[in-house]
Image (tube, rainbow, N blue to C red; front, side, top):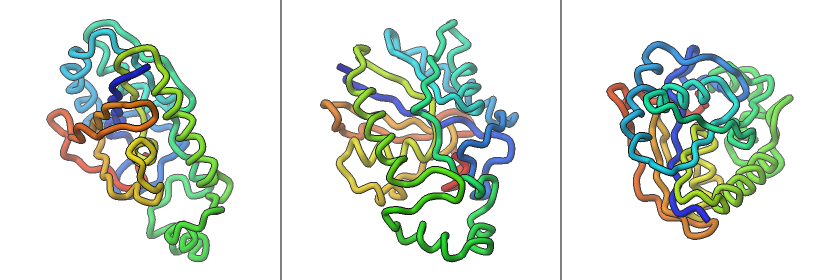
Length: 210
């Protein structure tokens, strides 16, 4: 079983930032993001024998490719690492969502259990997907797993692993190219580090900008 998990948020992408909701949207990395991703090479170079995985979305795959380009290793694409689907809210800012669908936005903000993004994923299904992801990662035979994924996935996965309620996910601000390190004990874990990485690592992605 895996003993250690490194969760890497994708680097800055085109159209990201400013609180825009980028779930299933599939933009490439921006030029600053490519520099962020290359700066991750030193981190992954230390992880000998690790298993590398990536979300299927382009911004995560490109981050993994650039981070691993120094030694020829590749990340396996895993569908379960994809970001939540915001449906018709994709690409909108929070202010735009509140103007467009104030009642639905209020249900999201107050954490109504059966909330679903219009035309997208429902929160309960996403939380269940994260729980299954945690079980799979914990059962991996590699001692260390490095997963290139998204802000929302990392936030909710940390809540699951640390035994926190899902609505506590906003306690974790995950910047672009940030790395969360978790020491695993089965499906539970201890957060050992949460840091920005690379020369542009202090650029903050919004709560959306998955």
